[in-house]
Image (tube, rainbow, N blue to C red; front, side, top):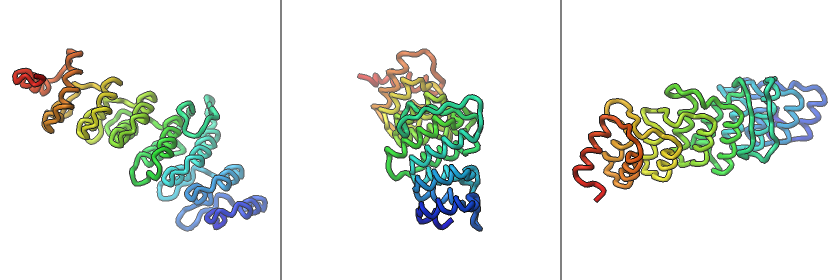
Length: 270
């Protein structure tokens, strides 16, 4: 156990040869694999995996994968995902060996023994972001591994991930989420991804979302729409962007019709 804490590869190797219990847990539930994953000891993680360490064991509702994600160890995340998928024994298992985090990596998994959904939220949590580039690689690995992005219930994993990615202005991650079937029009905290972009005055992101199929006419509650948010904030550039979109479509809602009528009567664009 302590050999894994201090990164003592040779000692870990010797203990494995002596048939030490690789799944022994401390009083609070930590395993050698969790320590190695959290502290970033790739070689020890590999040794423990080869010795059949249980990657699914939990400590404080976290497994080794989640601890590696929190510590931003991309190579270890990749190791654990690959091994976890092999252990899942699904019939249709494809692993393409490409650089860590590449958009060409494709993983398919039919269950969530690895806690991929929770790991993805960790990866999008600002408290655990140490390096943006590495963080994005980890997020892509988790998306490709099969996080349940198609869960469209309010507060589903796809909704939360999309909301957080827009909030952080991770356009490449937003695109990745959409490709992997996250619902671009889902809501979280009574906001859609488009509404978040308008709230933050992130017009580049808003434009991207509109081009990707975001529903400009979507209304939440009685009064909340993307246009009503822009109008309330007196954000003329956001209003102009949304007006251009409305010029191309016929669908609207009662709130936006009122705002559009008012803007037309005051010759807003003139």
